[in-house]
Length: 250
Image (cartoon, rainbow, N blue to C red; front, side, top):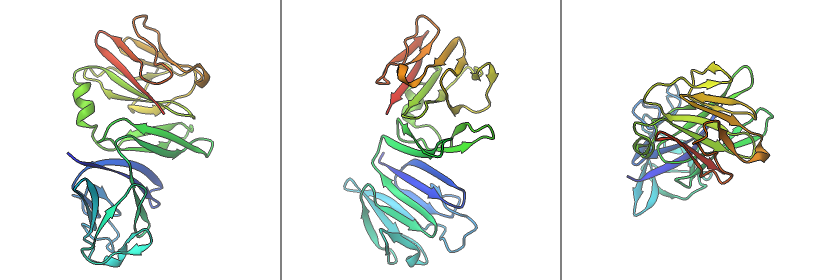
């Protein structure tokens, strides 16, 4: 099934996300759209545009009742106009911007606590992540779309965590937890299943105790002797009774 990766900037919600969707994809204010824009803005059509795959290319079809409301690289599109999109091209619908991103591995940019940019990577199509910030300053990563069938299949029936490592701070997401083991951070049970981590944080789930070491150490270690630490290139696998821990290093 063909997919498309979009970076969506929504100033109204102060959100920036990277979303990977199956094609064809509808974009508009309608509830049945894969990318739903401001539902209160009647100037946006219920189905404002469609993205389809034709001969291996991503094609935008302008479905807007107000055709001038769809702008690609600064040019307003006509009614039912079709445009072939390339990675990096930007589509503007009023104050929302959508940019085509090369798939399947996509870099996500979010503001870190220091006001800079922190990059995370998506490992497989079908996942979209939004960053929010708690009162204590920690970034929380919230899955806002179902995990890819790829992830569901390879981790089916097993406990699995995915670690994303970057130049700033690592983050961790539980992608499969069939037994419902509580996820704990520094001895406190967490309600969310994904969050940013800091050096010396201690993650516990089932019999795993995983310590986040300083960045220059280059590893994430589990205290269980039979588990291997995530190696610097991010491809190490931690196993105990068939339970994998998978990591990716940018």
